[in-house]
Structure formats: structure tokens, C-alpha cells
Amino acid sequence: MVSDRLDEMYRDVIMDHYRHPRGKRKLDKADIQNEGKNPVCGDEIELQLKLDGDKVEDIHIGCVGCAVSVSSGSMLAEIIKGKSIEEVKKIAETVKKILKGEEPSEDIDLGDLEALEGVRNFPVRIKCALLSWTTLIDALDQYEHDRADNNKQ
Ligand code: ZN
Image (tube, rainbow, N blue to C red; front, side, top):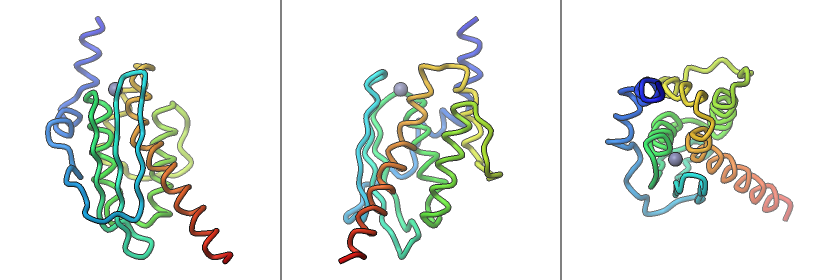
């Protein structure tokens, strides 16, 4: 039964993040901003990062969408706060690999994010879970690209 498998997928941890998303408060000033959309499901996300040196001092994730997209964004906000950009990139790549069913190259403790592994069984939902992570990776790539350009001048 599909509904049984759905129950398994929307485990307590996912619903908790959906009901009480972390990083909800918008930042006054952000060093990095990006937006993302998942047209398949209609999920939309707004991402803001405030940096302290190369560490993520604060983060805002505003996500309007299904439980999987919102909770994935909430878990992202929770896990990357206080981490360096380098660590954040490693976490993001690891989460992407896990969601796509690939073997992660890094052994990282993902905490609540492990709950998203069940999403792999629902191909349509993988895009929902990936949305916040691809939005984050794009934003960091752009930020590093801009920074490299500035250093050349
Ligand atoms: Zn969705």
C-alpha cells in the first residue's frame, strides 16, 4: 500500500521540521542570497546566509511547499549554522548523493537528515528534498566565483 509507505516516509522527524521550520526568521542583512523553485511540485524557497569570515553565522530559509521540501530546508538550516563554507559544501554534496541513491564519499553525521533517506523511494519527491540543497550549492558557487573575480582586481 502506498499510504503505508508514505507513513514511513513522513516520519515524526520530518513532520516536526515541517511544523516548526528552523531558520524561519528573515535576516536583516545577508551576504549570500538565492531563490529556488521546484516546478514539478510547486515548492519555492528563499535562502539567506550571513557569514562571519568563512563561517555561516546565521541562516534564513523561507520555504513554501510540501512537507518534504519544507522539512529538508529546515534540516539544512539546522545543520549548516556555525559551519564553514567548506564543511557546508561537503554536507550538501553528501546529502545530494544520498538522495540520489549514490554512495557518499564523506562519512558525515547528518543527524535528522537521515530521515530523508526514505524519500529515495519516491522519485517525484527527490526534487522536493533536493530543492534547498541545490539552491544552497548554486548560491555558494556564485559567491565563490564573485569573490575570485574581486581578488583578481
Ligand atoms: Zn514538493
